[in-house]
Image 1 (cartoon, rainbow, N blue to C red):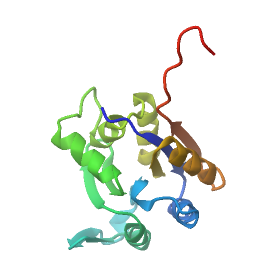
Image 2 (spheres, rainbow, N blue to C red):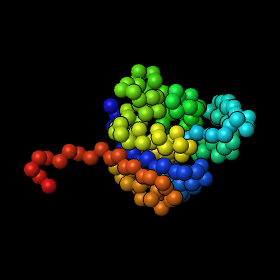
Image 3 (tube, one colour):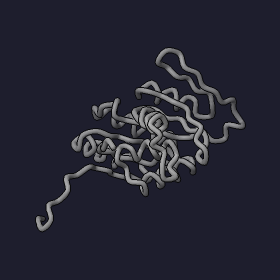
Length: 180
């Protein structure tokens, strides 16, 4: 398992998640180390679709403008239909983590592809399940990953945004028994 240092923020609205992405961008955070995942509910009232041209992806749905803007900032975009979770949209490295979990048959222990992707970078299973629950209730996940310094920087910035919950998953060296 490839361990990453990750900070996972849960946002109630797409506007809050988008504002957080822009805060990270303004602070000079490496946008290649940022991912976002969410659902677009109430699509029965709107045409929903997507297409790709070259390295660009276009999405029509209730939050089409939001996803179009996010996909312009982040690298890599995908649409997944995950049993039990439904249709999700993702941008950033999380796309490769999900695809890697699917291709590598890492989906084990009752985890779906998204959960297996997060678990594969070292996010604990109980936290992964919390993040899936947030997605099921129409919240958005913003994932910043990288070195311990990058994770700390992201955490400090995200704490200044209207975050609903902030999970920090840092791969710290194990303490030596008997030492403090």
